[in-house]
Amino acid sequence: MENEVLYLIYGCNTSVMPLRPYNLFSCNSSGDNFNNAFYLIGPVPNDPILRIIYCNVSISVPILRAAGDRLNGLNISLEEALMQGFSVNYSDPYESNCSECSRFGGQCGFDSGLSQPVCICGDRPCPFALTPPRNDSVPSKDLVVNAGFDSGLGQPVCICGYRTCPFALTPPRNDSVPSQGEYATCGAPYRCGDIQNITYPFWGGSRPEYCGFSGFQLNCQGGVALLNILSIQYRVLEINNTTWSPWTLKVAREDLRTTACPRFLYNTTLDLNLFKPSPDYSNVTIYYGCSLNGQPTQLVNQFSCNVNGTNTDSFYVIEDSSASRNTIRCNNSIYVPINRTYQSLFALPTASVTRLLQDAFVSGFSLRWEANNRICQNCVGSGGLCGTNRDGSFACYCANRTSALTCNDAPTGNGT
Image 1: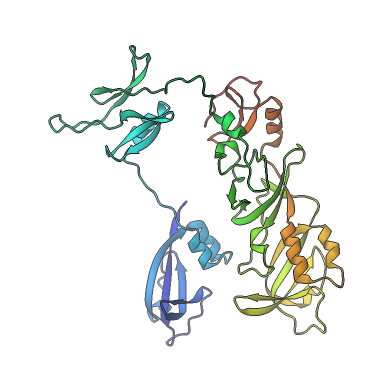
Image 2 (image 1 turned 180 degrees about the vertical axis):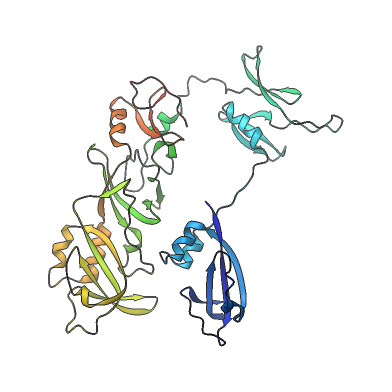
């Protein structure tokens, strides 16, 4: 990910020229109220207006370029752009040495007592220093790590610089311990709250990414499974993967669970390569900040919203209903899928608009997903477990190997 610079400019004197850019905001910091503050994204333009406006404080903050693009398009707020953070490049001084450790089946660690990296072999640290001990009497030279074989030990060893290191590159065999590879890991039971037996394509928690599919990471918080789809958090209510066609899950937007008047407004957008709404849904469009003064009577689908201390008129429209929306001006709108059973309830004259909206949002809506479904069906039918290789290709984990498609195929490298 690439970054760009966000400039925050506070306490500007706009008496010389009124400043009202779209990116104007106000804030209070340490008792100082900055009413005339604004932000700029990217290089500060050579604008003559900026030369005659004096400001008290300015700071620069890196943000993700994608967040900056969405902020420019007014698709997210300034606070959200800042909360998405920024990317940092870092270098590992022991990268080359650790890659050798990984190449021979170990995992790289660091011994704070020796102040040098070590290889973790199996379930124990191995007595192998990835950098040789310093000896000032010996001319300095680059470390060369090569593989060798100790015929006395009957196992491979690493040759480290100018000496042979007493490091067994394979952990001692223990036939009483079963294999803990991808098949065992991905086959282990996983649950989050009331959702049990979570399997492919979902991953997260104790299920590594190779047990699932990109875009299906579950974040289990306090027994609640959360799924992020295009930067919107959804609460997972049900997962149905017991039948092969179709696989479905029921989700509810987390930001609408407690209010129909959220602080930030987002449409329900889905990654259609992975998710598609089930047929049993209707779209409800909610309009906010509406001017209803010209209406002779209150609309049946009208309600009041209080956002940040300001009361505004709002109303909803289901599917293609014409409910006076063509004669009403509103500032914003969002659409949210709801279960179609609620469509008839909204038509009842005694219905409480905000209560029904809340109940509809909480009950959620169903999605169908696509993540190599048919290929996975064949893999499971052959006794395997579905997963994903590092390169993004499908992996079928079998009891003793990894296959490209099914456990009946010829063995392949697992790529993980």
